[in-house]
Image 1 (cartoon, rainbow, N blue to C red):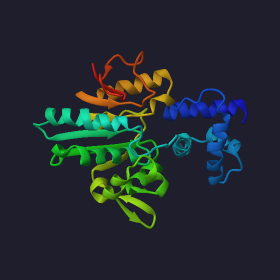
Image 2 (cartoon, rainbow, N blue to C red; image 1 turned 90 degrees about the vertical axis):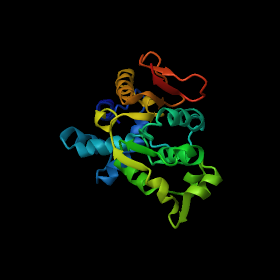
Image 3 (cartoon, rainbow, N blue to C red; image 1 turned 180 degrees about the vertical axis):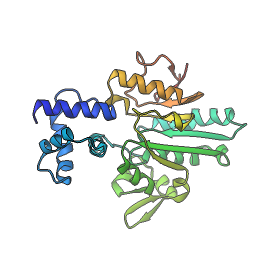
Image 4 (cartoon, helix red, strand yellow; image 1 turned 60 degrees about the horizontal axis):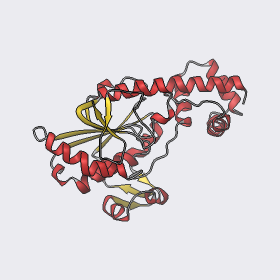
Length: 270
């Protein structure tokens, strides 16, 4: 791949999705975009770049961003965030929201749905006090393709073996010819919506809990700061923001402080 083409792709990705490739990732671009080029009837990535340079069709840019976005996900990923949700967050919100008996949760960059469904399972298993409450779980992602998969809630054997205890598999899934499907009760608890975190999301309203894990690591500092500022505004004054274990707000956002005594990266508004 020519240097100028790599730089062009990098600029398109950064502007459209916030993804900061940096230097030396030509191999990644080639491996991710070669199948995309072929699916569009183009001979190689060079042809895809020429198409991008000559079109104003936002659909091609969206497909490009989806192809380059990492959609790694598994049930109860990293474990500790869901322990914190069970032991700290749900009990605190159960006390603080007695008047409304309503909790809103947002799983940003939800990929194929393992995270929001893990949240729903945690609520079912460990928060019986919330059984009669209204608990809204919104799951968003840049890619419409992964959201379609998430809505169906169907996973293969490999996917359900990654992080999902056998007891939860038996309780919350039904075996079907295509694999395993989340039971309808849990599917009804989660709504899905396409969303780019670089865009305004003020219309989504305010949330008591936001999961935005392992997303900021792909952004440069200015983009991290802008996204964190908007996430903070979308967080209730006593709400909780979950970030990935390798992510921090230090030196980026002064409006958030880490929750003490919790292993996971959980933050609250200052």
